[in-house]
Image (cartoon, rainbow, N blue to C red; front, side, top):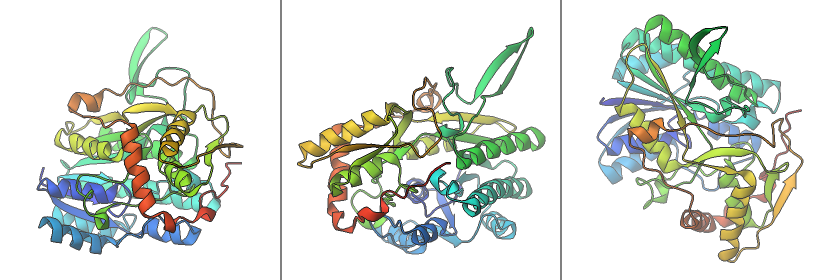
Length: 383
């Protein structure tokens, strides 16, 4: 593999992924349409620190590393645009981050729901067709989500399950039961990819990722101009990132319902590892490989208590507030997930230690004057 096309390259995960592959000598092509930037402005939920645009970031990276990232600004749902990029660079791997990534955003109203459906499914469809037309050997890495599975009352296998029924056995995609429209579109694009794998023999890795936390990666630790977004609002901010900003600003940690919901979490550094390991170990043609991508599980209560304990050790007065759950989800549930695939490929996890939390607190402290407490909780309700 030498040419990597990263779609959604301006995003929370997209930009660090661009640097990660570039640092390792790959030709990196980054594509984005600035949806996240525009949506943040529209909804009044801008991130903790303003970030240079993608072209500016690429120039800053080239000045630091001597390595170029090729940038194209355009919409992946525009097939002519996407196909032109594929034809120009003939990528060996395409990493698909270009989906609308927020469950709350998809539940705001009908228009946001329609955008989520159109953007997420058409972008995936276009990628499949561009791969077929230009390089059928190209490896598609699609970022899925553990939220596709929901919280069934059985163990969650790694993507697939064998079922015996009336004396016969077969292997199926593990049943999905998403808790938001966003997660439902992620199920639908998995199904779409599986159809085209069976029909056209393309190769796909689907990464069922849990909630990500953190800001720094090795490429950005020494230069804040290269760090990724730190959204802390309800719509685009992941739960741990939100909690730390809330703690620094004196805002109660917002726990939905009883707080017993269990999820699988991972450090952003480990997202980089996982995507890279998937890319250098591609599946055979005609295969859909699925990895459950996280490193440890916590209840939301446990997560809040971790933030509270570290915050108070650093001198903050941290409180926890249980809000009426705006989502429709099980708050008491069984959760036992198989997640061995990426570890077998060599994943070396970074666990959520007090030291990791302290570093994150110190980062947020640097920009605490930028925190706008009014945008933290937006009150988006599923019903």
